Length: 64
Image (tube, rainbow, N blue to C red; front, side, top):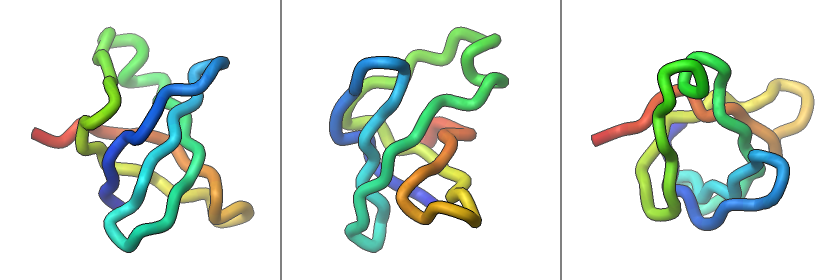
């Protein structure tokens, strides 16, 4: 799913608003951390949503 980062939270979590209007908590995937991709509020990102908890996700890609 695609969304926009709304705010950064302590502990490496981000509040992301999805394209359908829902707001989820997400962390940055390890692949992005290893390549030092900087994620800031206002950035568009692609997420994987957890199948167990629909309010949690993982940021897997930064969109242009």
